[in-house]
Amino acid sequence: MFDKLHEECGVFGIFGHPEAANLTYLGLYALQHRGQESCGIVSSDGIQLKAHLGMGLVADVFKHDDIFTKLPGSSAIGHVRYSTAGGNDMKNCQPIMVDYSRGSIAVAHNGNLVNAPEVRSALEKSGSIFSTTADTETIVHLIARAKSESLVERVCESLQQVKGAYSLAFLTETRLIAVRDPSGFRPLSLAKLDGAFVVASESCAFDLIEAEYIREIEPGEMIVIDKKGMKSYFPFKEKVRNTPCIFEYIYFARPDSRIFNRMVYPVRKEFGRQLARKYPVDADLVIAVPDSGMPAAMGFAEEAGLPFELGLIRNHYVGRTFIEPQQSIRHFGVKLKLNPVREILEGKRVVVVDDSIVRGTTSRKIVKMIRNAGAKEVHVRISSPPTSYPCFYGIDTPSRKELISASHSIDEIARYITADTLCYLDIAGLHAALRQFGDHKVDFCDACFSGEYPIRFPRLTDTNQLGLF
Image (cartoon, rainbow, N blue to C red; front, side, top):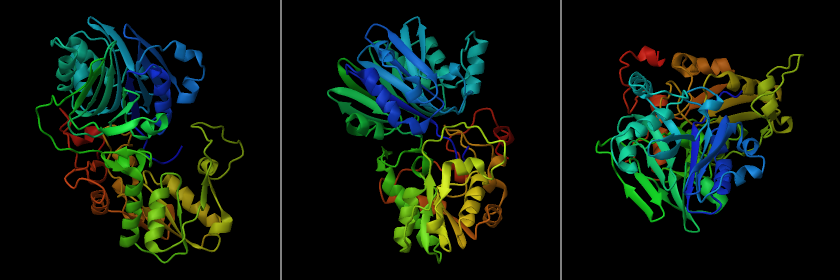
């Protein structure tokens, strides 16, 4: 409904706690913002794996207490999904669980494998039969076919055959394995709770269950947890750049999370401050497009010395589908979710801050709503650069022809959304903000803005095939 890039997925895992499935449920609740299409939990009692998966939100899929009696054991992994590879279908729910010659294994995946079509084709030619269309299943097939003896070696052997973004949680009858790809595109962190080890895409999941944050799992690191404790490996020999996704800070991660060794909230506020320094405007107040635009708008207002007001109120109880009225209501989809406050906006010169513009259709409707509420001027400020290129590392991005900034100048976009002025934070401003809160040497992936992709796409020499042009 909204003109935003869609979240990827969220993973959670716990080993060594008597309420593993229940805590995984709570962890998925905290990660719900990362995917709302489907979710699932797989647990182990030390002898066998049990699963419960379904389409919809966590609260809907796990709405009966008796579900948890069918998920016994002291270890579990969970997943919330928004499809980036494979369709929105029950068969693509995760964690994916299979039985094979060496036992059972389940996997939850956040990211996207850029060479999955090639790997899948090769596997199918050699006799593999796939039950899903998700790229994650290729990893399971590779593990089943691996020649190494130990599970750790089989997982390593398999992951060295895939390329792209992956933060993974594997569960067997007796072990939990967590691993990040060598580039570190997607977040994954480690915590402890009453002697149990916990892994999650974001630290907000630890906060909910009162687990103690330990550290981020490093790019290229594999954590193996069993009854003897935890061991860390760095099995990938090839050295690559550490390129975590910069868009996690702009939009995807919850502002109360710590990812890539930085808290999200102060970074987003600094994006707003950078915007105010570079693109000041004579105005009466600053408002945000809630909720993702709030921290940047607060930073903008503080730096500009302008009052911050809640000029747009969000309805938090809107689902993904709704019945449109037969009698046409202008801007119905946006009005269902956002409502302007006339008493705040009327007669005012308004700065409205948002995190991004994708197609521009929603921004256009929001600007018109603010004008209809009586605003005298509407100045739009975006706390990221123009999104001009699709992502292939775990974000569901439209093709390049659907991205308005790929084919229109900033002035043209301003006219389209009917803003008095429009300014974006540039790439230099993004990186300047991030450098204030962490390691200066981290080379964030900003391919959706710059078109500079850290990982090449196998066997696709014509970029037209990728929808780039």
